Length: 195
Image 1 (cartoon, rainbow, N blue to C red):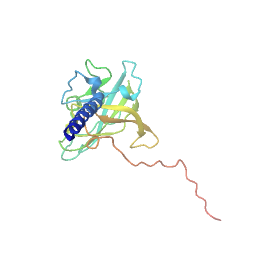
Image 2 (tube, rainbow, N blue to C red):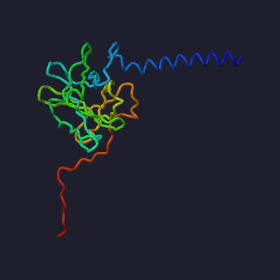
Image 3 (cartoon, one colour):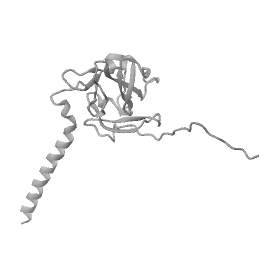
Image 4 (cartoon, one colour):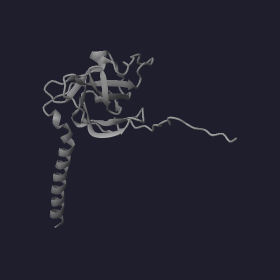
């Protein structure tokens, strides 16, 4: 009797684990049959809700933090809004943009050091919506970042909202969204002094 019970329990556990694997891999459905290159970053705009209807609509890949502009890594990051940071549409994929930071702008990354990346919707010279900052290391190359559509407070300016973003197939506890406590300064402060 106990053997039958254990075999039924094992069968149920196998079915549940197969279903769980199906749920986890469903995020990667838009990249089925697509092999990312290990030197590039990818961003899938599908979950953002951004209007990408014109040929001028692209994604910019802004990177900062880590050991940029230090003695150990004298690479200086390109300023926000730099046209060199605009990625290209990935061949054969719908809504996925790619960027090779070493080839395109000469960025050097130190293994084991954590950097930040922001994905921004650009249309020509106009930088529009953006994601929150997302941590990454060299282990994140060849992975696709995506948004689940939720918004969070911008980690630099609390008066703005940004799309929450994650890496597919990477634990967000290791390299996930940058969370910060921000402060919104009052527009004016009135002090009254007793007469």
